[in-house]
Image (cartoon, rainbow, N blue to C red):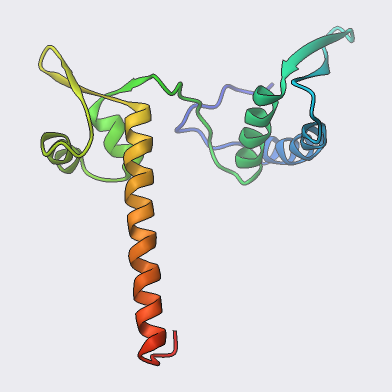
Length: 153
C-alpha cells in the first residue's frame, strides 16, 4: 500500500519506478490543444471511473511524477500560501536569521501576525527568481570578461 509522501519522506524504489512509467504515459496526453483530458482510474474493486482533468492539472501531475521518478520528495504549495520564516529560509536554503535580515531590509515583503512574521510563497518565488537572474547575469559577464582576457573559459 502506498503511503502519503510528505516533504521529508523520499519515495521508495517501487514508487520511483511507477512514477517514471506513469509520468511518461501521461506526458503523451499533454500533446493536445484541448483544455481538459479524460483519464480512467481503476478502483480496488476493478471498476473503471472516468475523471475529467484540466490539462493544467495534468501538467502539474506530470511534473510531480517526474520529480518522484528522480527520487525526490514532492509537496504542492498554493501560490497564495503564507510561510513561517523557518519555512521560507528552508525554501531559500539559508538560515532563519539571514532571512529575517532580508525581510527587515525590505528585500522580501512580509507582514506580522501578532509577533510572528509571515511571508507569501509567491513573494519567495519572486525573490528567488530575481536573485537567480542577477546571479546568472553576473556569471555571463564574468564569462565574457574571461573570454576577452583569453583565460580559457
